[in-house]
Amino acid sequence: MSESTQAGNQPGIDAGQRLSQDWWRTGIIDMQPGEIRYRGYPIEQLIGQVSFAQMIWLMLRGELPGRKQGELLDAALMSAVDHGPQAPSIAIARMAATCGVGLNNAMASAVNVLGDVHGGAGEQAVELYQDVARRIDGGLAQADAVRAALADYRDAHGKFVSGFGHRFHPLDPRAPRLLALVEQAARDGVVSGRFAAIARAVEAELGAGRSKPIPMNIDGATAVIYAELGFPAPLARGLFCLSRSVGILAHAWEQTQQGGRNKGPIPRQYIWTYDGPPQRDVPPARD
Ligand SMILES: CC(C)(COP(=O)(O)OP(=O)(O)OC[C@H]1O[C@@H](n2cnc3c(N)ncnc32)[C@H](O)[C@@H]1OP(=O)(O)O)[C@@H](O)C(=O)NCCC(=O)NCCS
Image (cartoon, rainbow, N blue to C red):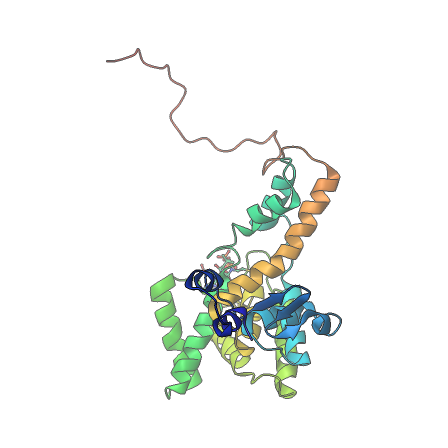
């Protein structure tokens, strides 16, 4: 029973107390002195029984996942923890760590740049897969649904389809492994496998008629898992932030231990390209 419900049943509770108890309403956590319950489960029962990934699921979704569902979520979360200092989030974590700030500041700086272009591709990919699924449910064949959804996606977002292609990896080694896990989970009856099929169909459509494919990347593959597990698209971005925070913390900590001071994004002997006016004299003051 929530505190507010208890309060409502307590004789003599006044309107002010009621207002103050109801100021924050949450179905996530309930506490009394000496008691902590998440989604109703006592913390002492969760500790030692529930993995971190299962706990993330419980917090976000309200119910505990099955063990295999938790393992699939765990695989998606662990697969995207780091992509080296070439990734802006990681470089920013390291730069921040050389500025004399604490780990929390370095982490916050880095997480703050995870947006539509860096780290947000998973959210858009989940939306695309769900759009294809809706069109299939509406009666279209899969190939037609993919073509129609891609056309609308490009009208809204431009030519690049989130979750596919990579600047560095001709084939992102994480994607096939994650897809293999999803397909195993589908064989085990843990997920339906429909979003894996949809993502593969999108990949085939993107590569059709090209000399080289445009393969699924980490965001496209983790998006398959999040869609298969029933996470709403916006949570794909939040989950990516949780995942990448591990790499961000590791790099911030390593850089802190290395002890660099005030490191900028490029070695100091290199300078940026200046394309402003040539040197000129400040004109005499005018009224
Ligand atoms: C990552 C990205 C910027 C790399 O783009 P890139 O450097 O142009 O990649 P390539 O040079 O290998 O592109 C080769 C061709 O495939 C096309 N292409 C690459 N990624 C594509 C995508 N996601 N959707 C459609 N076409 C794509 C390019 O336009 C290019 O076409 P062209 O030969 O007709 O000019 C691009 O793939 C992208 O924006 N992907 C979507 C965002 C995303 O998923 N980001 C997360 C990455 S982990």
